[in-house]
Length: 221
Image (cartoon, rainbow, N blue to C red):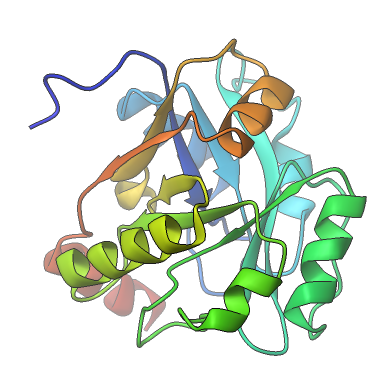
């Protein structure tokens, strides 16, 4: 139950658009569904590109919706999310160098879906503690099995004493907002990023329904 959840901005921190090769969500649909889900903001984290995020910033109709530009970088060992990033980060680099590049670009680095067996993940090994990550994504709506993967992700964040985040990892507009953080800060990107870094984000979420997963397969086919 979420009746006792704290007040704050509701933000989905992991959303893909059609600028990701495996996503079908247009920028217009992202705006529409974000509003429909009652989100205050969304992080656009396309695979190895910031083009979608940059095209969304300042777009007509986006007023009142906080857009956090980001990227999901394909490192040599798995994916890393960069939040508050407006410059592309090269893919194929060592994870530690990727994190360093994200920091140099003014962003924070988050490990997404750490234990997920069907995703390109960095895992939960001890080496993760040496990467300089800023947070761990503990709820990702696309992880299977959802409850177990969320539990293992939380344990990793607790073991590393790192802040926790959540995101839908949506590749369809209907999945936007299924996972999100609540964070009690001013509605400003820099304030939100600093709040995440300081551990003020509270993660919530549920899995993508199987019917919607099948819908994605059918649409892509």
